[in-house]
Every structure is written in structure tokens, then in C-alpha cells.
Amino acid sequence: MSHALPSGPALARVQSFAFAGIDAVPVTVEVQISSGLPALLVVGLADKAVAEARERVRAALGALGIVLPPKRILINLVPADLPKEGSHFDLPIALAILIGMGLIPPETGERYAAMGELSLDGRLNPVAGVLSAALGAFRVQTGLICPRAQGGEARWAGPDLSVLAAPDLRSLITHLRGEAPLDEGPETEPPFEKASLDLSDVREMALGRRALEIAAAGGHNLLFSGPPGAGKSMLAARLPGVLPDLTREQMLETTRIHGACGHLHGGRPITRPPYRDPHHSASLAALVGGGPKSRPGEVSLAHNGVLFLDEFPEFSRQALEALRQPIETGQISVARAAQITQYPAQFQLVAAMNPCRCGHLGDLERACRKAPRCGEEYTARLSGPMLDRIDLFAEIQPVSPIAISRAVAGESSAAVRARVEAARARQIGRQGHSNARADPSGFAIDETAREMAEQAGTRLRLSARGLTRLLRVARTIADMAAGDSITRLHMAEALSFRRR
Image (cartoon, rainbow, N blue to C red; front, side, top):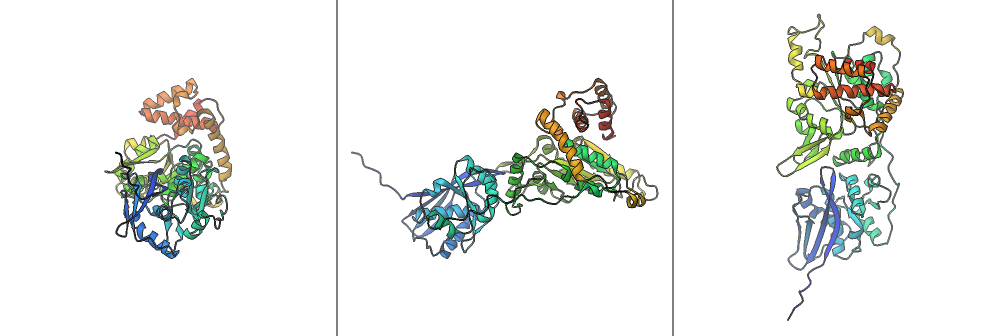
């Protein structure tokens, strides 16, 4: 004789997300309200911020006049073996409880994923990672509920994504109950445009300007060297102004990284190449990522943009050597005992350094007593493998005060940027990406230029990597001249920017 099993308490479910790097991982928030001693429990490998959601949710519901039933309320975060971090689980937990209490329709959990932090009065506060969550919601074919301030950020995931951006829990509940529809507000926030410095401020310095334009046109790594005050940092700071706008794919990926760190301005996307210039005292974790929660570092925040390292030899040897992997692969792996997190890190490295610690090597009147040994010791801080990953080396000489006062304004960033965009368009049409990542075996090259490269490679003892980077720079110079193949003239200029 068979006996039917008794039915247990019903479960309420709402979708949310955890994060592995910048990727959103689906997490289901389950709530079970059953008989027993009154309790509000959270299980599922939750960190302290998630565990504290119990009190924030209780207070926010209380502010709306909603009292939790005197029962055992169990909150389970599925999958249970995935670490859950962050206050963005407040909102899905509150919604799952409201579904379990019968105060909002149960189909809410099927139609929407949710993320947001609750204030004690029920307001929804911004959280990190909304754009990644929106892309994750689009993949699992649900809408997204998020704080009102981040509605524009979520809508950048695509026009087909249904977004509910609520200012507080009360207005969200009335909308879900069909009593007072939410005002959706503007479709998207206008892009955030940070004013960039203009190259017209740079007077004279023809060699430095040429190196900067070549680096911009091909996405090449660049090292400026010269005495203090020669204008190395001034040139580097103007590189973003001559780079092309980010593509939509690059914009989404870059915005996701900055959103994961909470660096977005009003939910606006990043449409221009980012520029990061950490101080030389930056730690290894700050530069490449890490820390207790494996946060992105400067190399990831500079993804699709520029990483400028001033006083290059003053960075710790460990930090500089850690740059070698992302320069080659375009991503960084942050390894911890519990997990390995990968972040994109495809950046353009621009560095600046003095010729020696005092900065006046070669100036007989100002050089220190240790010259020239001080210069050898100073540059020895940079390893050969690190220098081998730099494409262009430019020595910047100071401009005399008389020349500065009499010089006319230099060519503007807009004019240089037009040439850079034209060169990039040729590269995209030929190989789908910039020359900095291209395979030189596909380049058209004159026989005389090939012979010059082979002879220079032997004389300068270039490694295979060094020869590859030489050919890439020569190809960029040819693209800037609208040339179909690399000529001897292009190769000669590329060699002039090689380290001797």
C-alpha cells in the first residue's frame, strides 16, 4: 500500500548573480517560510555583507509597515558551494520573502533577476557590477531589477532587456502589484566624457610627438627617457586624446571592469580609452589585481586604454615583472587559495624614466659624482625581458626656455587623431585588430626592407620577440603613409626607435 508524501512548505525563488572576475554567475535566492521557532537564517557560503542582509531587509520591510511572520524563514543561496559576496543580495532576498508572504506575484521571480542594496528606510542604493548582471540577465532571458541610479547602466546591455529601475522598495512593490507603474525615466544616461589634454600644448619636441603618434596608430608600447622636466609625462598624458573611440564591444567590457570597482559616474558607459597612471609606490596587488576579494588592478582598469608608469625604474621589481604576462596575453590571472580569477588586461603601456637617479646624466655641470655608473645602476633595475616587450624607445631632450617662448602651438590632437583613425582603419580592414597584436608573417615587405631587418636583428642581437615588434612598428609606419608594403624607409624609421 503506497502512501503519498506530505507536501512541505512552498519555496519562493528570485534570480540574482555572484561575480567571478567581471562575469556574472547566476545565483538563485530561495526562501522557505515554515513552522518553528522564529528565525531568519542565511545559508549558502555567504560572506559577512550577505549575512548582514538579514537586518537590512528586516528594517527596510519594517519601514514599509511589513512585519515578518513569527516563523522560521530560511534563505538559501544556490549553488551552495559558490562564494557569495556583496550587499547586492539585499533586494533579491527581500523580494523572495515578499513572494513567500504572498505580497507580490510569484511570477516576479521568473520574469526578473534582481540586485540592489537596501537602506534601513527601504531606499535602493547603487551596487557594483550592474552592467555585468544585466548582460547575465539577458543571457538567461530574464529582465533585471536594479536601483534607479543605475538604470541607464543596465540598459546599455541592449534594447531588448527589460529593466525595472526603482528608487525604493515601496515603489517597486506597488509596481509589481500593478497599483502604480514605475516611471522608467530616460532610456540611457549620456556617455561620460572626460576632457582630454590637447597636443597643441606641446611645442617643438618633434621626436616625442612622432613616437607618440606611431604608438597611437598601432597600439604599441612606448618608453620615454630624458632628464626631469623634458616633457615626458606631458606627452604621455595626451595620448588618450589621439586614440580612436572604443567600439561597442570594448565599451561594454571596459565599463564592466570599472563598474565592478564602483568607478562609474552616474551609470554612464566609458566610450573613450581609459588612462591610468598609478604612483610608483603602488603595491603588486594594486597594479595587477588581488587583495582579499581579488579586485581588478590598474592593468585591468587600463583595459582598452593606456597604462602610464612614470618613474618606471622606481616601481618594485616584482610589480614590473608581473606585467610581462598581461602584456603578452591581454589578461591577468589572480591566483588565490580558494580560486583563480581572470580579468581582461589588454592595455597600451607607456612609461617614462630619467637617465639616472639624479636625472642629469650627460650634463657635465649638473651630473652627480657617480656618473656614469649611476645611470648603469639605475637602468639595471629594468630587466631585459621587460624591456624586450617595449616597441618604441624615444629619448626626449629638454627644450630651451627661448625656444619654448618663441615656438608656435603644436598640431592639435584632433588633427593627429584623424591620421591615427585612418591608420587603424587600414589595420582593422587587413587583419581585424591593431598591429600591436598582428602576426608579421602576413605583412607585405620589400626585399630591401627585409634585408635591413635581418642585418639589424643580427647587429642589435634582437630576440624573436624583438624582431616581431620591430616588424609591427614598421608596418604601422607604412600604414600611416598609406603604403601597401613595408619599405626600406619605413624599416629605417622603426629601427631609429629601437633600444641600442
